[in-house]
Amino acid sequence: MHLSLDLALHNLASVAVLAFALGALAARVRTDVQLPPSVYTFLSIYLLFGIGLKGGVALRDVHFVDVAIPSVTTLALGAVIPVLAFGSLKWVTRMSALDRGAVAAHYGSTSLVTFSAVLLFLDNLGVQYEGFTSTLLTIMEVPGIVVGIALGLRRTLPATTDDQRDRRSRWRTIAHETLLGRTAFMLIGGLIIGFAAGHANYDKVAPFFKDVQPGMLALFLLHLGYIAGSRIGTLRHAGFGLVAFALAFPVVVGSLGVLAGHVAGLSIGGATVLGVLCASASYIAAPAAVSVGLPEANQSLPVAASLGITFPFNLIVGIPLLYALAQTLG
Image 1 (cartoon, rainbow, N blue to C red):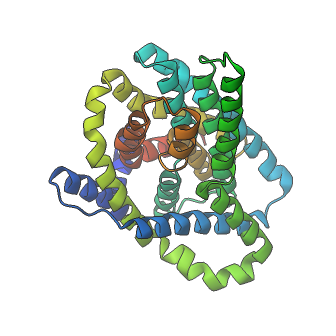
Image 2 (cartoon, rainbow, N blue to C red):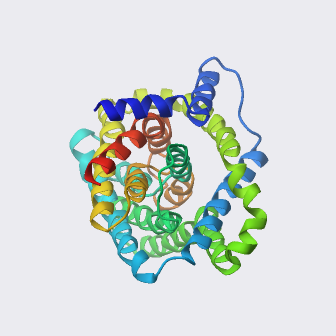
């Protein structure tokens, strides 16, 4: 516990966390520090492509068997976590199946910025982690969204031929949003390019994609802090159950991820990253797919919970806590 507290205090003083807090404060005092849409898009593409590129280069240095077990483990976790979220929400809230499916899709998917934050956290501590962790991020991105939406839809079975056609049309659009949306496309594209380019070519662009990344991440977090602070009011209408879920669920599934990473043979740093991936919740990729797959669901609740509660909780407490757990197991 003492170790976790020290790590949390150390993390709290980082520029990235303080930038998020500044953005949230700006929203509450009505000072507009939002990034222009074009800048926000640039930063998201920059982070996605840079992470994929770095991971692709790292894949050249590992054998298939070293990646296979962690990848299968990650895929299984990506399918199980939304099921756990869907069931947990039934016990702690009065949300409909559609709304629970929407929230489950967000919590089954991953957060790019939380992933970037845990890598920065480990780098600052000098802790090594597997270079293929961005591959695990890519693997977990899709199944959580698909399973969450499927859980939300299963209670509303089609009764007519038109309903069946609408369902098929939705799934085609969902597949496009999850597999060819910006997040998956840039991550997978970066992985392929990094793998093909190799170390020599990557070194030429590394100063831009590696050395500048902490500053870019701080600006991105400033923007997200403002968005989170602006949406806090939405949670007042959600009830205590959703708030409790947004705080407790990441700890439970994050611990499960750390344990699974340890069993899969990952290092302390790698197990921490996998745990944080499990604990994170999407607020970039999932909303687009959920708005298509579950348009009748309350779209504001999952984003408010994931961005307004779970993201800052992971940023300040969750990452240090899961690292301390990984150290204990390791």
